[in-house]
Length: 483
Image 1 (tube, rainbow, N blue to C red):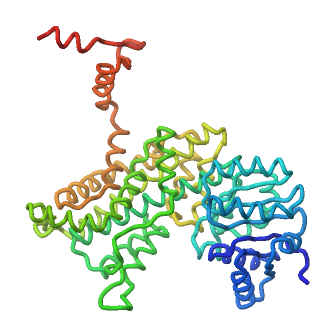
Image 2 (cartoon, rainbow, N blue to C red; image 1 turned 180 degrees about the vertical axis):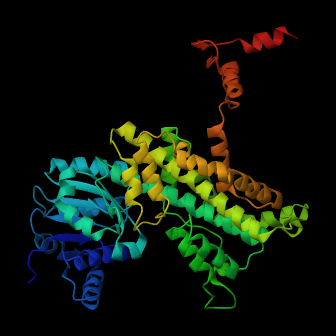
């Protein structure tokens, strides 16, 4: 019979198994449970193979819950939505006052807030915790974003700080804030990830389609970039992907992968929240649109025929480019556009924090994203420093360091976007990021005309640049009186 364990974990798909093994390896005895019992046995077997780790499997929820020391702490890693509610119902039948449930999935933040209130009524504590890093991160050290009951966080802080990825500034975990803030921050993290991946894909497209780089050359370029300012997990894995040969045929595997991108919903939630909060997030939105368009593969095949027949073709063969210059320009464009993606994500987090009074610390979020997570990158350290310099920074773009870098890179960025447009290559992420930068840096935009139109047809009024107050003009009458 196992002694009372320190913690429990329910939900043993790959992420759940790996996180449980990570916790056990850090010296915390753990109980595990899964509705499908074969997963329990599989996890117990892995624990034996990976070093006789202190992990104990249970086939029924009652013995699982009773095996954990009080006050009990249980992490759930099950699919968002109804399965979470079902798991809570199953477990809470055996829990006692003061016990704690932690949802480690990608859950909609309002569901977490609803559940926290319901748990509170039963005397139970609840946390919604974003976990980033994929399978490898869960096993060896993820970035974790717990939000909700502070008492619940204190019950598990000693475990989380050891299990999280470790960087020079400490473990990649912190108490995020009240309510659903942990889930919200993880959702925005995923939105930034969507933008990042889209921008990298566009860099690849321009280098391959216009620059005619081979997969071997692309591997070298991305590996080189990963030794400089673009050093990051996503750039690193991109270099790896270009080097993998097809094991089922000739050539490279990346060329055999169907150009249809899947998604699970966090990117869509991010864009919906941007609209709700009236925060511009065009880089993230364009990455989502690109995934939608990629899904129309059959339509695109037909459209290609129609437009080719009509004389519309990519003008790639006409382009004579200096490869070395193009590679350097694309590097600079990618970096500048990435800053825009992160700036938009941080603005979304700040806007929500103000609305919900979460008092989130943007610099600390940048710090816990430095290791373990999918968007981990060297320049997150500089984002942290930007918010340390000025916690009320209205936009990353105007931080003295980042603004200098944008100025230095804007010419290369414009060259890449113009080259792509001329070649018929779509770069929605880079283009929308550039439009975001250009709109943000211009003192005066053509919004005066749009507001005049609104007043013309809807009497919505307008403000003036020279006299305070709200004004309405009978535009129609004035226009017709001139005829």
